[in-house]
Length: 342
Image (spheres, one colour):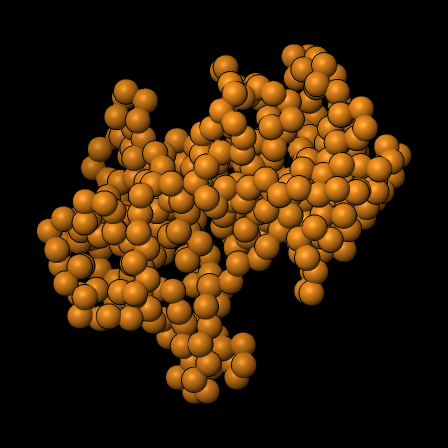
């Protein structure tokens, strides 16, 4: 079985600390814009107009000039967090600064890209976030900030957090054990001993909403989740396995349900710490449920009316709003899921 559980990291019921749940790598929503909210982008997907400009990553002269440019903007990332600030009018932004005001760092300076106006963006990885002289800015992780920030800043933060996670855990060469050095503006680690090059790791995971012949949705609950929290099933793709085969296998392993047809919906970067969630709709060929009892404690079929009543009574809590799990459920449910304060 390729799924692992982590109560803080997931939004799909079978995914773990490396996965969670999800979105749309194309920058589109999951449906037709029919009032369900499906026409809005999925959180953390690259819709903010940032050109990653990868061809500049090995050009040290260009990077130095870009860093020194007066319009360049920089933010600090530390432990998966960055400083954000709210303007009092419902808008939240990353706290950025010109490069000449940025904290000094020699190596952990990551080039993130260029926007349509030619502004270059960098992230600095530090052991701690810088202090602020005002009461507006505060630290926030990507799970919180991802639903508050605008598309540009959410995209930048997801990129930076993903690089930071990888840099902190891949400092040594997996071939010879030598300490590696950073290259390509943070997107490569090179071994000075054996010459091996190591690139940021992304682990593919499938996340799926399964429906039966009565058009009921299968939702599950992890053993470590709060009482009442239900979401879609999810799990990692194994070596040599297709995405569709992973969907079939994971649903069978976790819920004992046999799946027939599998249709791709959308994808979502999920840097918690290094996953790419690939969302699917799947059709069960049998309604019988047999949970594994290890990762999934409970799984149930819900009609739309069942789920609406369960939300209203508080018996069921919806999946996290940042995740593709919510969008997959909404795709079937026909309207946005209830949120606190809504």
